[in-house]
Image 1 (cartoon, one colour):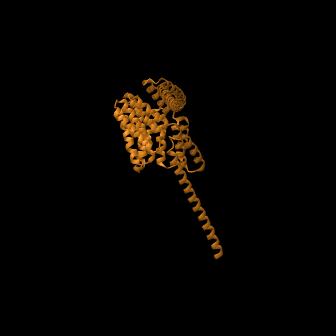
Image 2 (image 1 turned 90 degrees about the vertical axis):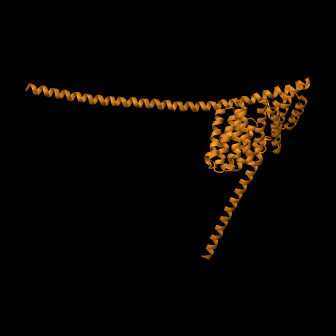
Image 3 (image 1 turned 30 degrees about the vertical axis):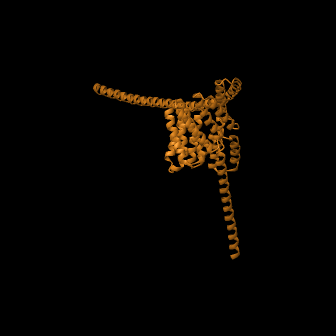
Length: 384
């Protein structure tokens, strides 16, 4: 018995050891993937192709639903950075489908916010506001408020974008400031990208509001925030903003110097919108100082980049139309359902009324027959 007991004990110990080893290996693997996701997240603006490649490799390595949602979200962000909104939307949809399998409320907030951001990028503002409101409600219901600063900050900043594009800069700046305040509370390094973007957009708003000094300060702060995370594209955008202020003030030489600096910084970024704006600024400023050869060079680059941008925008418009078509189809199905339900209800009422009519007529017929019978009886009695 003792020998058999020892054998069972050894087997149980080996099983426990194997289970502990598997659990440790799983935890270590999850930790490693989580670390890679965080590191890749900082390269979304600078090296989106690398982020996409790494993301696709990570998805194949894990069965963890929460990690898969985060990876799909990361890849979607990378495609957004490339302004490829069709593929970005595809990965958001993948992440959304996986949400059904998780109880992680923070992931639900994150994906809902991301969906709102994507609809804003597609210029479907009503849908963006709809998802922003959903995300905000989820955030307000979340018990650990310290964990929601990043998502609430991004939510407010996207609202600022929408108001800015609707030419209401005062309200836009109000939401940018609210968003920045929330992001600063989070104390996460990755949030400096969103802070830089918000300050850059504040600068553009202040230009529209004819406050060049405040705009210049916003662009400088945007540059410094982007520098913290080595985001070259965001630094270049901030420099482009500073150049715009210099151009408006007639400091063409300073604007040219700043734009050339932006061109150097963003050499490896390959952002069509950024390049288009830099080339446009350089051509306008070289024209202002009568440097025709350089004007022609950069104007030609501007036209070429503008054509590429229009091609990219046509793809985005195609995606937007598809989304609108989906909405119309869904709306049509809903309206058809309502119509058929209404027709069914009306037909049911008609049938019930008809049945009621037949019932009443039958009763009336019986009453008449009874009366006729009574009359015949009375007449018979009188005759007798």
